Image (tube, rainbow, N blue to C red; front, side, top):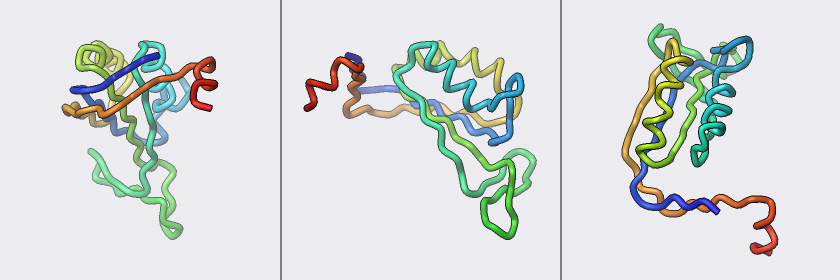
Length: 120
């Protein structure tokens, strides 16, 4: 069982949905590397509208469908673990925005398959 409570660091990476790494989605590569690094968790959120460094607005509205909507990957873990992961992003993210901010985790308990019976 993994517990993460108290002070933590939130890492948010903003990229485009069509950004790739070796012909696969960049957001997927980031999530898989975060998992491989043993970070507490990662989530990918697809935006419905936004713009970045190019100032081109991307939207999901029907009249102006975009194929490159904004994507945010959010990772929360201890400061040491998140900062140790940053060199991975240096390699992967060519164009995007990376934000680090302090946060407080109220409760996180990771459960394996064997722990399900304890909930029932």
